[in-house]
Length: 111
Length: 114
Image (cartoon, rainbow over all chains, first blue to last red; front, side, top):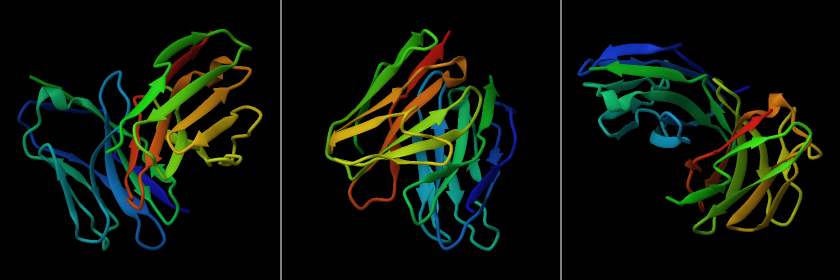
């Protein structure tokens, strides 16, 4: 079945550091891929998405490229801020509407 | 994207009681779903709320425990029945609009069962 694997957290960085959160997936066919973010005490917000191979999703300085050859969708940001501290979830959507989530990665950014 | 409102946003519930969570969307949506996020965990789909018919439940979730209604294209409710401390979770309503492939989430309902 479909599955998503994320790197474990927490990821601890200083402000302005480079961020990578790894995400790989297993799926049949051509799933859509998503990154969602959950800020402390809040619900889930869509951060970015990609629907086909080689698509790059981007938002708020974050980027992720849909790599079919490596079945990956790694999240990157060139310079993190304290306000980026949150839990990040990688997810895929296959042929149904069901979202399959990774376990989430907590990011902590210190000034 | 659709604006999704959930009530209550937070509640503390007594063991053995039931609580109904409401989800209101500001526009008609094709699909509505209910997810659960247990403390420190990822999200798990409970069920798809079908308009005018019984919800479609995922493995491990049953209608007697989580009855769901969806009377129209903008509103759904999830009831958590006969609650125990293990039901302490965030319950999130989510929607898909039209033919789009993005699923949007509400702010969640944070339930603590004591």
